[in-house]
Amino acid sequence: MKNNFTAIAFSLAIVIAAYLLGNSIINRNNGQGTISVTGLGNANFTSDLIVWEGSFSSSSLELKKAYNDLEKDKKVILEYLMSKGVKTDEIVFKAVQSTKNTKANYVNGKYAGDIFLGYILTQSLQIDSKNVEGVEKISREITELLNKGIQFYSQPPRYYYTKLADLKVEMISKATADAKARAEKIAENSGGKLGDLISAKMGIFQITGQNSKEDYSWGGTFNTSSREKTASITMKLDYKSE
Image 1 (cartoon, helix red, strand yellow):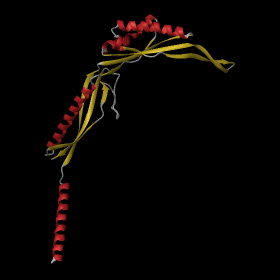
Image 2 (cartoon, one colour):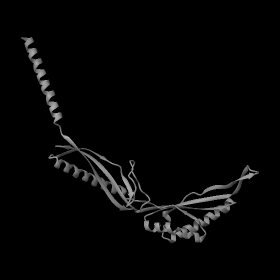
Image 3 (cartoon, helix red, strand yellow):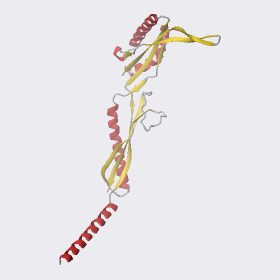
Image 4 (cartoon, helix red, strand yellow):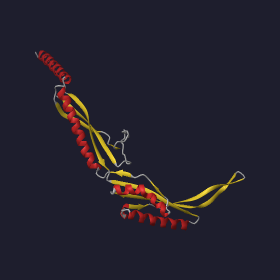
């Protein structure tokens, strides 16, 4: 009797196990699908910060004279910039760089050492200003210093946006809404219903010059040469499909 009971219990366990296994396969095969979409968020904006750099130099056989000449030029440049509306706290003069100017000396075609031609002192300056239009104009007119006997070497201005963090949040919101709208349309067209969000992944943040031919980069593009820019970002969303 005991053996019969054991056999019956064992058989029942096999039947239950087979049912559960079969049921799990059915649920897996009829499980919910997923909808994967990518949304885009972009915005045009105008830079509100300009960074402009330049340098000037002096030379002399005597180091002290070269330095005094450099200081005189510095004073003229500072007065010129202030007359154009640049504030003193927007200007940073960097450390003076000193080099010895030499040339190779040859005697009868053989190198005989270097000839000392004097010292060259160079100083650079940087302007960080929110007066973008004003400093941009100065960078184009800086050759006026030639009339004052100063050779000023100007670099192209760089343009930035101080509210970029807020803009990025806004664009992520736009990209997410765009992706969700695409997912809802896909679900509707397939006769289904959009389920819960499974995952969300942000793409690379890109900033390019407006109307430029700049290409997007896998590592992200960050344009600093254009005053008018376009920022863009993508969001990849995965939803359950019901």
